Length: 330
Ligand code: TXA
Ligand code: MG
Image (tube, rainbow, N blue to C red; front, side):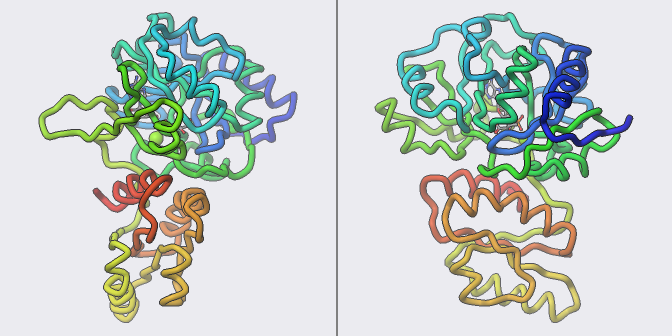
């Protein structure tokens, strides 16, 4: 199969619509990472998303809709706090999990009685969703367990020959996946941290819990149990406090003739000035936006990426640390 990369103009969007209506898959940009979309009503199309990605069959997909889509067609029991959160943060990088009405294919949620709903803010994502007019089930558009894609070229590198079309909306500005928030209880509960932080949710909803899986307990966001976001080279992760040890390891490995790269924030880079640097940037937003780009760049050039956790740990960095820890093997 030939994989086309097209700018999301009228012709490309019309093609995307024909592909989706025919049960095919389309790669599309969002403000977080690129998605791999299928018609959420079409069980066979959704099944092929799992096949193309090599995704485990028990990890549910998020359903994407445009901002005027009536989600009461898909879900029910929307609590008042969720309405307020939607008012404030949607369209944007927040996925809300509600009770399913059972109208979309059960393959989307792997048989769970809930559905994650996301309204992306990227203009091309909105155009695509509006043009298609259907709810679109979409995971990140990478091969399962690989680093999520933040450019059309990243999607192409993983899925070339397996999907007909990638809509190219440029580089994603958010950089890490949406916050997944369970909205089925009295208090919202974060299942996956992201750019909409616990503090931002609590400010609107009054309170916000964070799900921490305990040994033996049923996983509520099945995706969280898998190895994820991993570059195809060796990795090591050091805390910010241990950055001198990280630099010593970097120096030692390069001295042995290995291509070791230091991946760190601006403060750490300025302290050690390594020649082989994967620079994450200075602000939390820059670090989130650069993380996957730098992991993908690193796997092209490095034998080993030596990552140093950013100095700042709260807010958006909770999401970054979650991804960085998993990328470096948990
Ligand atoms: O930013 C994003 O969310 C991107 C873009 C493409 O929208 N999508 C994305 O999808 O990250 P994916 O499939 O890579 O991650 C979906 C996450 C998984 O951790 C999954 O377990 C969780 O959402 N999830 C989906 N539906 C769920 C549900 N009904 N209950 C609990 N967790 C759910
Ligand atoms: Mg993913």
